[in-house]
Length: 489
Image (spheres, rainbow, N blue to C red):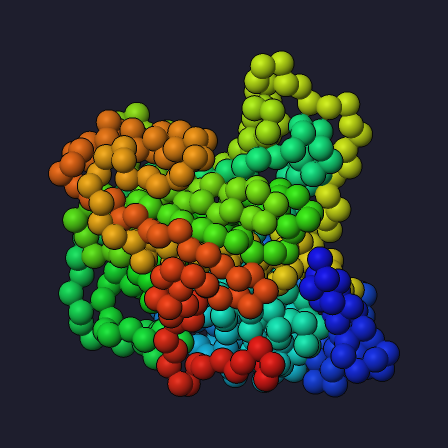
């Protein structure tokens, strides 16, 4: 908790005392401070897919105005600009730009929102902070562990508002449920379990070709070292390639991972797990993708609590979609999303007057606008501090998977020691893969990752396989888009 208190102190008072830094702003970012009655002027970066939601939300909000749209694909950019010009909001005057660096130099904007591929997320947070602009960043806030730490350092140093695109942090219902869990109403929580199980299909193979003329390939790649362009990268399937995406675990799963993390006891809030492991595979799809479509992962924290996580994407007859969270307690009771409680041997909720976790009203986008207008980083629902810790948990799980070895596809693949609950949850996903997806027993392979020990203070792995695992904490970067160290940000 000491680190979190330090973050709050730096965000409010700044490193230089109560001068211009009284709200955590240095001289460069001081220009971003606005009057309470002025609109927040925003540049939306990445306007395909999720970016369309950003455009709608910020253009329709009474206290914000879109001044720029930013995208390296001129076809997509022009379509979105035209849709704004056809509207009647102040945002119909928005201009287009392909390079966010030109926009960050502009005095016309107060903030950026980021809906680009994952490899750009932390870099845009850092650049926004250095330019004195606030930043709404889509999930996950980082593509790897080290750049997440650098983005957090930038948010701390420059005192900007950073809000992570995990909308459940802005939900009254989730604020109520998390408050009840933390209150002890259901007893001691043992496992916080997230699910990102939604049907998807394989993506096939696309040959390496020259990028289309309407796409600035250099800007689209950004920090990532990518051998060549192919159509499975642009515009959505980049999620399933490690150089740009993070797989379903830190795609859809970021929302459920964040809730699972949010529900942990306060004594381990804003800490990293002490060890992780993951297993799974990319079953049934003979395609170009790299990330698993089936996965079971575990993270153990210092107080003995666990986070479990399931990914299950392969569609089949009778497929059950599960994009949700569940919570398991020491007395055997189980809590579902929405508050449905299943007792075990007479276990019942305690008579406790639980208070909801405090959030800023206005939904995901409205709360960001309010935080920016108040120049208060701690008003963000899911700030960069929370984002770094919940995203890192997913990165660590992915690293275990990426270091995994092939093991025959059968019930013996899981290595959970005496953790019977972990074995039971693994068997559920194994039986679905076997009976629903039709993965043949002992004729296919799981990728079984090692148990990896993590030093949360130093943010690196220790012990067995640590050398290989530490290499995956930071992705190779192209020089034009490199990041400074956390101390030099």
